[in-house]
Amino acid sequence: MAEANPSMMRPVTPPLPTGTLVPQHQVAGHAFGKGKTKLGLLQLSTDGTLVKPFQSSERGQREVDFYAQVFDPQCTDPTLLGLQPLLPRFLGTWTTPQQPGVQYIKMEDVVNRFKNPCILDVKIGRITYDPGATQEKITQELAKFPPLQKVRFQLTGMKVFDAVRETYLCVEKRYLRGLSEEGVLSKGLAVFLNNDMDVYQHVIPLLLRRLHMVLDWMLKQRKFVFYASSLLLVYEGAMCRCCRHSRENRTTTFTEGENVTWTDCAKHDGTCCDATVAHHVWECSKHHLGMEGETNDQYVDVRMIDFAHVFPSGDRDDNYIEGVESLVKYLNRLL
Image (cartoon, rainbow, N blue to C red):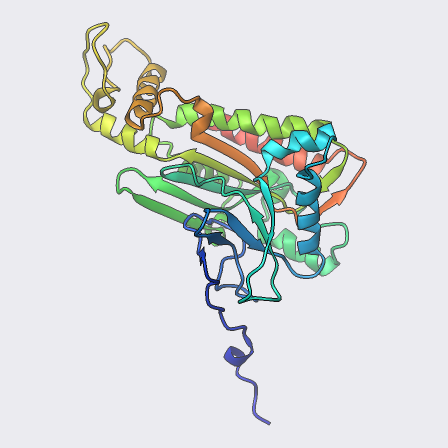
């Protein structure tokens, strides 16, 4: 008897549904045309929102139920209302006649407002399997990233704007899973934050402020426990382009009160500290981007994502809390 051809057993990649695009800035999760089902995250060309296919078995329904509970228009629960700003906005479900058996979660694209978004997906917690996991599943999860038990979070994908080449550096989870405990900082987070550019000194505190908002909510809530859930960190990479230009045009003297433009914003009199130079870069980068009137928070975002393994709980979610606390410590080390 002839053996079955493996290629004949794999699902065929379906055509893109009408009115959809493959997202330009996806860094992790199920990608369209890959994996077992070939289904993945899509973007609607009409309004730029994202649609995410339901995961198999009860996971997909669990995720959409969670979103629907948090964003229920009739909700008066202060815990859920406090969670809403920390998630992508839920916009219901979406289907297409071309895939009648597939349901999608429709949600806000949080990176859409950035000119050159730098994006990092961070899976939170040292426990990435839910209470119903088999021993085989637990063993499999533990083997994926051995330093996880100490690091308590794992980097699963990133996309960083390279201001020198004016292109993107994309780093996949296979590389990131090979990092050591120290490499998570030096070859992971430092790369994401373009740490050879002065502007990162301003980006990190803004990211930390958003992370503390997540942490504050998590410390108070006793409604849910989150497994295999991620944080999406985003900052404006166009700031690094401005920083690059400022370095190329840097001079060493200036007169107090002299007009400073974005092309020479890093000039100083030799007595001010590096932080002052970085401040010039930051403020003049904002000038170049036409965003002087905007708050600094406009340049960063942090959102909780991926809720297929969220369960009701009356206890504190120490696994998630310890993961966020560890990420905060790592970012503080970069400062």
